[in-house]
Length: 544
Image (cartoon, rainbow, N blue to C red; front, side, top):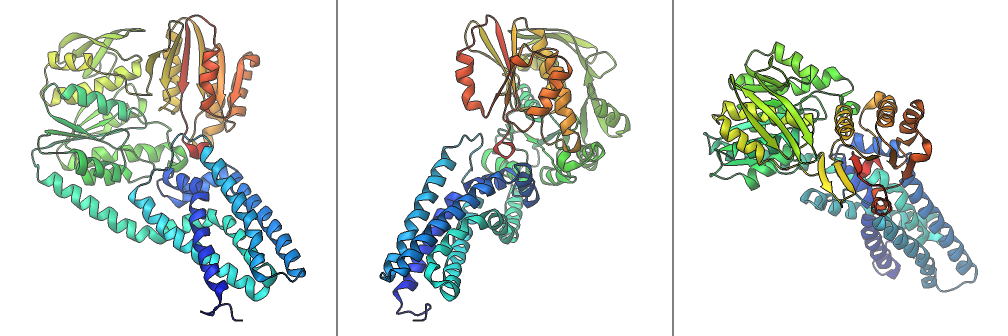
């Protein structure tokens, strides 16, 4: 009987199996969609993850397919040789579905730092993915009926090994639609901004320090203005667009937009959306060197905010403690401020004293000064506060208002946040930072504390060709300060260990763990008095 025959019951069974399998494949492909999302839906970065993880997830799919296929073939061949009714040929599918469900269960039970977020875009990808998976499953069954009929239902086991390619393929198919949706939301956000022509718009960019500076500026400006700032680390076009559409209202007088970049032109795109009048460059460093390729491209990209401000007769603030920012300040022609730790800067801080209770310093501004106190620790936080002060001063706040705002600053979660676990253990949580400069500053702060020092880190990422050496150097710096080191996952463990060895660190004091889920057990076993634990960097799942 012709398989594609409306009177053939096996046709409808094949259709049903195709749909069921397509739904199962959605769950099996969870990891690949998660990485695609973490890669900002950039197919190239998705394949970088596959390469960096040495395709270990693909090998698991391969094992699922091969084992299922082998069991189904053996079952179907045995049943076929016994001339058993055709319907018994479906018996082999039990092995496939059982192994697939076990695979899914293990996948979802695996530790995740950043689970897949079910957004509208993911829902669109899911629908198209399930449709295509169902079609592929059915076509494979049909092909097997033509050439390998005794094992025709074993064809279904081949689908999992196609998923690593199918996921980016579906993403590419939907790109034209996503671009149309993106343009629609951008247009909607711009329209909303135009309805409030008096809105003060501020853009903040930099290799590191953006999010902290944004929240510091929001707090200080709120002494005088009603302020809307993009929440969390929303710093992409869609993130800022969402902030404008959902959070900005007519009561707000100021909009602060954090502007992130991984490719040249990203800051220009965000400035075209927001059209800021004021800007801050917190730093320029080797973050995201993997995508930028070189420091010159990073510098040019960060400077795009200055070029945008020049069109609006705007004002820019530079962190003078960053060497490249100093160079950019020197060449900038628009109204500008530069901040730092001595009198050569427009706005500066001195007499800085740090303790477990925070930081005291003297703020100098416009030939006047005032004593300030903040719960924050670390000179890098003072650097970020100073750039926020410059914008606040430009927008009319006086010294008292600024000092009051500084006193109200709260540590940004996971950015050198002090957490007192008990009378013996203090955590210095800097898990949302991951740059070379940031690691130096975090270690310098740890050095200020007395007590037994432990560092928990997975290392530094997105540094391209210098990544290996950067982690060796990181290990050397750790060796000079730490009493004990806990390395999370294996990606950079050898490089960090090499750095520790270079400085004759006691390797018996080095512990390696697969993920942070084990850290609570380890902390609970610490019996040292006055123990300080620095958490530096907390990699998303595409680096684990």
